[in-house]
Amino acid sequence: MFSFQLEEIAKSPLIEIGAHTMDHMALAGMATDSAKFQISQSRIALQKELHLPINSFAYPYGSFDQQAINLVREAGFIDAASTFPILKIRSIRNTIYIDYALGLERDKHSLPFYLKINSNLGNFSNA
Image (cartoon, rainbow, N blue to C red; front, side, top):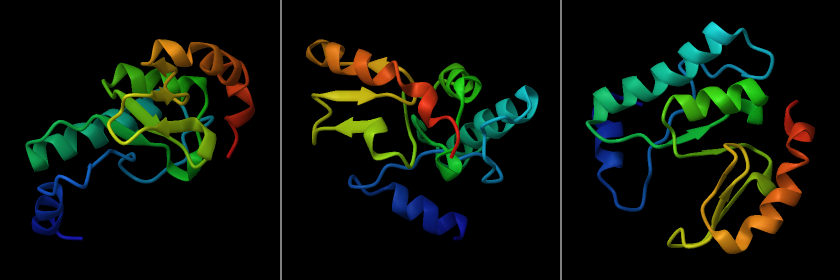
């Protein structure tokens, strides 16, 4: 895809552009410096190119571990997704939203469910 095509797609109110690492590398078990570069630079590059905030991250191959979760959070993302379908639940207007991959809980009524699922987060670290 060319830059002008990405810029055109990003204008749509139906599309959200998110980051996905610089080189589509599995993050679980990656050296900290490499993972940090892959995560943060993908966000920086997209924001620079599109002049838009990039708030979402998708773990390549669904691969993440606790280090990747922490680095995604530190890079400033507000949500993240994996290929595991239980990791991200959204309503149409984000009124009920739980992001297990980042460990964020935005709806106080979802807290018991969040805690139950989050206690099993380690089971998802190997894609």
